[in-house]
Image (cartoon, rainbow over all chains, first blue to last red; front, side, top):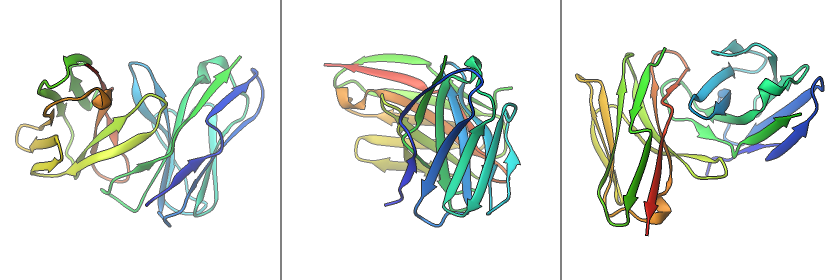
Length: 112
Length: 108
């Protein structure tokens, strides 16, 4: 079974802190994604990566950056957390174009 | 912009009822996905389809490519089916577009 893990299920941070969310997949997938999920808005793509050290902006990249130094690991970074970044963050991976995505359990981030 | 529209947004059913959730999309797709999200966050893929119909247990998914419409049916619904059901489409490239989800509650 494909497994996608995220570093934390729940996280509480203060405004202005630097926040790292990590995602690891064990199926050698090329593609990895970071989404945020907010009530009434559904899943929105923040960034995705189709190869090591490659990244592409999604629909809402402002305030976020990403890092993919190894194929299995994709990190989402909030350089200076703000209260409007309180959300559920979901990581996903997939083997290629048009194929299904496999999701991690999510990290519920609260920024105070 | 809403490339994917789902209806209804919320649905409450009695145990045993037949349930239908609808999804309409406006973009060209390579595949349409139905996802299930239980309270607590984890999302699992139920179906990936590009034509016709698929069945898995009590779940049936259909797609009409010409009408750009898909339905997810649940027969003999059960309280454990209570979850958010999300429709997603995969057009060109690696990006997916997601509906806002249908929150289903099945009452015993």
